[in-house]
Image (cartoon, rainbow, N blue to C red):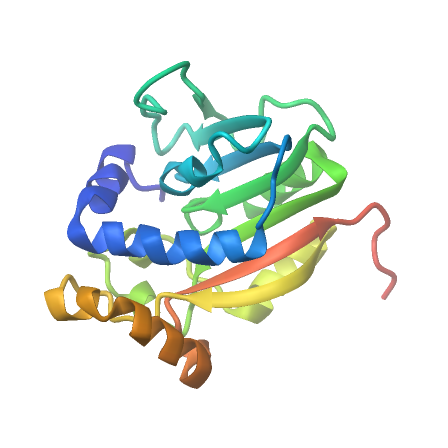
Length: 221
C-alpha cells in the first residue's frame, strides 16, 4: 500500500529525512553525473532528489501515483508534478532519457505493469535508476521511515523483476548504512558511517540502487 504524500513530505522535512536526502543525492549524482539537455522524470516520490537536476536537465517532471497523492512542485515557477495511473503513464513512447524511481516499486501492487510502462517510455538507450528498500537491511524493519513500508527487495529479486521487464541492470550500489533512527549523533557522523558501511557491510545497507538500461531484444534462456 502506498504512503500518503503528506507523510512522505513530513519525513523529508524532518532532520533524519534531510540527512537521507543528502546521502541519496550523493549516490544518484555519482551514477548520473551529467544530464545536460536530457528529459529526466521522477516516478513515485522523487521530488527530494529531482531538484539537483534543475537548470541542467532539458525537461524535468515528477509523476506521482494516484494512491499516493500529488503535491505542488516545485514551490516556485511552473508546476512540474502530475498525478498518474502507474500502469498508464501519460508520456509518449520512447520519450524519456532518464527515469528515477523512488518510493515507487516497493509501494506498487502491480510491479510488472509498472516496469513495462517504464520500458515503454524510455528511449532506446534510456536509463532507469531505481532505489528500493533492501530486504536484509534494518531500514526495511522500521516503519518510522518510508523505507519501512511496502515490499522490500533483495538484489536478486530486483534483478529478476527488471530482466523480466526487459530492463538490463548495468550498475549496482547501496546507501543508508547509518541506523534508521533520528539520533543526533548518527546524523552528525552519517558520512563516515556511510563510507565505512559501503566497504564493510554493504549487504545490510538500507537501500539498493540499481541503474538499468532499456533492452530492445529479450534475452534468450
